[in-house]
Length: 583
Ligand code: OXD
Ligand code: MN
Image (cartoon, rainbow, N blue to C red):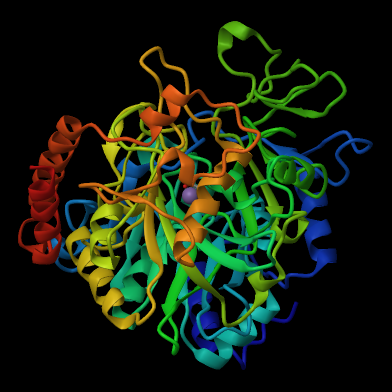
């Protein structure tokens, strides 16, 4: 497309300077049309980067395989480069901006020789929403381009908005040589800029997602008075026809996509669940004192293994067509295959080798689907509303074998900030490193908060001050296990029983027991019709062990010390009050 040079001088100037640095052979401006998407798919098939899947079962679906060392986010190589180290905080790796820029200059210098430089203008959020923010990603990967087209509102419409606003996040990406020793994801929040080199993996390379919509946006949100959070947004309509929206934060690969697309159990007829977003929420105080959410994304980049008709029927149906698969296995008749799929069997593993059980899982545990959100059978049209949706409840959660009950309710917003800050979870395959290790992951933002957590919590308290009608705040744990390792709660669609209680609490229609950590339902407060959970399991799920919680609170107090003077006094006071209630 013609690059609209007269409309977008700041973009064209930046593109020209990057071309000079990278020595790209050609420059291509992404327009965002369906025909163009098709051309990219053809090109990637010709180059062997995409393989067409069985068209009879998976129409318009393709498989990409990444380098085996490039399958997840690289938190240890991800940096926040603020002028002052304290502004990035102990929660981020930090490098001085000048040093980081020089290092990246060295890597980008001449790196696109013989390659095409693609310019992807994109808008995070509905194109006509004042809450949305734009960016431009420059990349030398056509795979990244097609993912960005599915995940954002990309192309001409975004460039037009940028031309009007003049402000955009600059994201520069090259896959380089995929050498893990020459791989960095650098953020310059003070300059609204991102530089990512040496990885083609989603979270490192699709710069609109984690890099922009969370790390840079969280920083921007603090300056502008809103929140950028690692949260799904779901609409729940009760059998009485009342619709309420809930935002929920869980660490990566803890079931956000499943909760966002929940299928009500048969024993709870009359409920409708719709998806506004599955990973990121931008939350703004509204004029009426409520909190409003938009989903900045337009597609899903979800974990494939475990997806089936029972765990997530909507996602399963959604990825039967028009989907990009990355790092799944293949059946003999060229259908995608992954662990947890209840049909077929793998013959080729995710690395393209004949499948051998001794080589580990057939599909990479962090293998992904990329698909436009509109393909979701439960897509909420409100996802395109420029005003966003009003949030009744915020839910935090983690993957924990013990300690945290199935659900509890914060006493008020300020206590809720502690509840969110206390999220801890066992690590998953979404990031490189050992899975299954318990780590603190406040608000599920550990890998994504673009500034010092101490300042971030202060900002949460400040947002609470602006809300006359704040959402109620909850904590859930779907992953609690018995002493012999069995999950105590069935999870998936049955989680609606917990959401039902939460929504009734929000409208003053359900009771709870006050406890030291917050309000818990009694077994009789949950709708358990048609659910087979042993009484003893329920008692365990809905009770707290004071000894364990004293240890938890002491650990939290120690954790907050890591942030020194930046830890808000209010948060310390919340921990002290919790300790006092625990006795
Ligand atoms: C994701 C993640 O990809 O959290 O959403 O890692
Ligand atoms: Mn995520």
